[in-house]
Image (cartoon, rainbow, N blue to C red; front, side, top):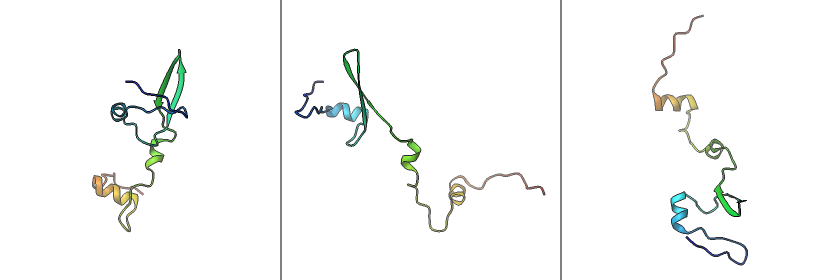
Length: 82
């Protein structure tokens, strides 16, 4: 596929390539020169876990243990010995 460099040095990645590679608006990209060719790769500046941390909302009064138990069922723990 071909594209044109705009006045400000911008390249438009053709839509079929964006769709097949999952490139969305705002996606950070790394660009480098290698043997006379431009190599463009998607980057992940943050740890993927950090990106979703805090996105799960628990029902009022629930803590993490209650949510996990609701999803998995009660834990089979050995009896406590004192």
